[in-house]
View 1: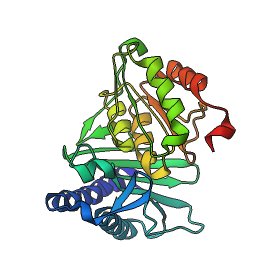
View 2: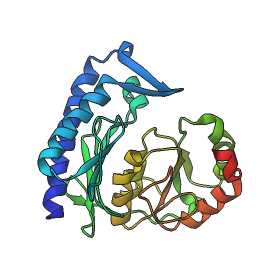
View 3: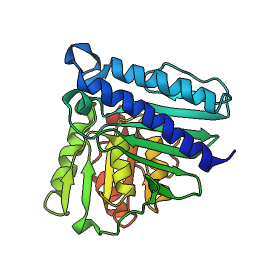
View 4: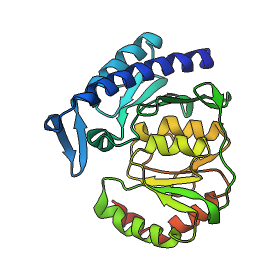
Length: 268
């Protein structure tokens, strides 16, 4: 399997889906939004994008199964799996607020083989394949080198507000005024890509799905950064938490998270 060639083909798939999303946004009506959970939304655009992506990826790699956010395709015992978020940042999309993106990863066994994230509003395609480096629109990217005191960090607000509110409040209290600045951008996939490109120095979020972070996690790693879960474990094939950094800020961010988290049983 030629990973570089396949990655660039997946970039084309992501761009096609992004073009569809962009076109639909022009005439989008909030009346066509469904509520999956409290403050967690889905639209016909999410589903339409997913159908396009799944159909195209089946042609590229017929032997692979799927893990998708909207569940329009599934897997059995395939060795390779496409992990797809057809529209990461749906709430941003609904409000016409950048960024929002298409995210596609390919896994084989316990490894992420390639990752592609296409940001619709800025028309930027971030991508990486295992061992090949990380890129945006053909230009190599690398994480920054800011220490925590000068870092621009992203602390996202997941939908599970009841469980996460005590954590995020204490994280903001810990870092506000003690780092360069704090941002919340509403897209896990893009937060990861911004870390990879040196636009952010660190990012942390809990209660997200594999489709949110899988592609971006590889892009960060191939850009020279570090990605773990909240417990500091490097294995990213499953779980619901992500810490992605330039490496320099990783230890202090993990330390802060460990100090502010409730006991594990309280997170359920």
